[in-house]
Image (cartoon, rainbow, N blue to C red; front, top):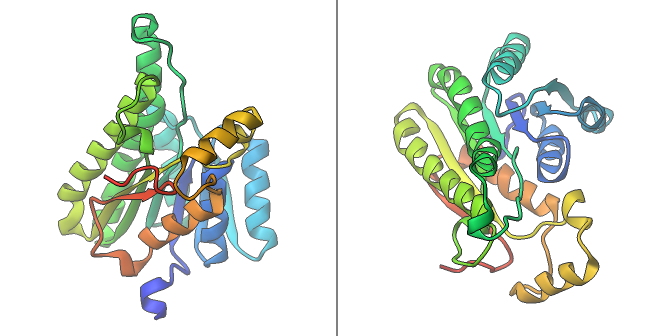
Length: 252
């Protein structure tokens, strides 16, 4: 079974890997024997994640970059490829939730910011690493979207629009890259108990948990497990999929 599940020795790049789902995925990859590049904006947090991995016997590096900045992404990828010479796994968790005001109050700058943060960041690093994956004839790309990109609810227009955009990007990339041995999938989480989410008032979290069919919120480790599956060699027949890891919040 090792040839199906093992990612040992592979190079895994995780954007937004300094906290939450990204951190959990990076730690999981390290535990599975992959070399892990943690990309983020905060060296203190990134180096703490690297220490978690290396203290457990893994190999990791932190690379500072703003993932919506083309030049910084290019420099980050040059550092990773220059160090390890390959790129097998790319997990795009960089991005985040923006609670929009009513439509009439949303500014164009806010819309651009949300698009850059959630979509452009994924596009830029994918474009940078795909040539290496094509040369290898192998790659696994996972984009973190959200159940908000699949549901029809009022509010959060900027955020929901970008999350739907991630799904479209994922499916188009999956079609284009499939002949090269590269799979591209998305995960649509519900509310997950990341450090950012834990800052919400407890009554809000309780209400969201009650509205979720399984009766609770998700954990970063549960998302990391789903990410790991899509990044294994055995997931080679799964591409263009949106995996709902949201406690049943979406059953469409």
